[in-house]
Image (cartoon, rainbow, N blue to C red; front, side, top):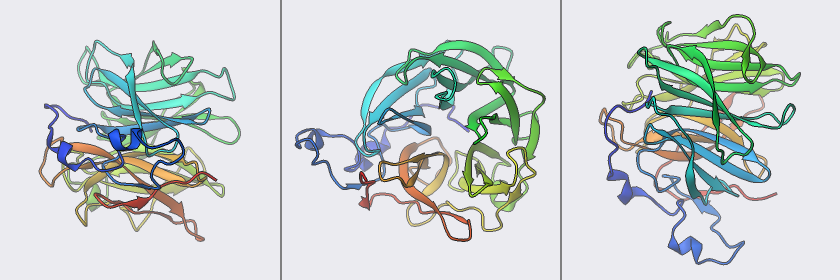
Length: 322
């Protein structure tokens, strides 16, 4: 879930060497640091990140000021340059983007957004552009009383839109898609808040799909995003339509060691060929919307169990080019 109040500025003192600063800009090309430190970017309040890898660069889109989406660009997932907004929406309440490159289709970029519904509540829509920097042009609404869209392309080319149905009590659903703009059939409910760790707010949200060795891993965040109990878990199935079984060791990312409320993530392949989770943390254990972006590795073990670790304020090995 996303903020309703003013962004706070407490994070300025916490921004470490992972943000692009004067020291990095002064370094010769190819000599940027081999470590990173969370917070990832110098942008207090950023949350709900989506990252797209496109033609050798990474494009990061966070929830920020609720009017649209700024874009941050990087070649290594560590050093980021801020660019102007790629999309704005007069309806406001613009949260939790997802960005999909239809490289096996028309080659265009599709931006799935959450915004305020003039009729009340929230809605999910889609906009399209020719480049990750936009501009993106709105193509209309895909779902009402809904947030947190994520489009997944399976190996056979089939497309599935995962999102949160607020009408169903923060249930995560899947909507088959004929193409990035067109729904096909009806949505199916996959998971609801049922576990104790999901019930500090009775929420399952922020879906993200991974596929590994023929198995589907539906990652998601549970509990209230404004509190320290926000965390990340996953459920698995043999079909992108389910049925999904929640991993008994959930959550795999949770508060501890100075980390509060890690959640609402995406996963991207780094320049090292490994998987990296981009997500947000809360700045303190207070119930508020004081958040910042973070990055940490994510991996599968030999048994197919998904693992991650979450860090804050310590130097960590950065993704290295292969």
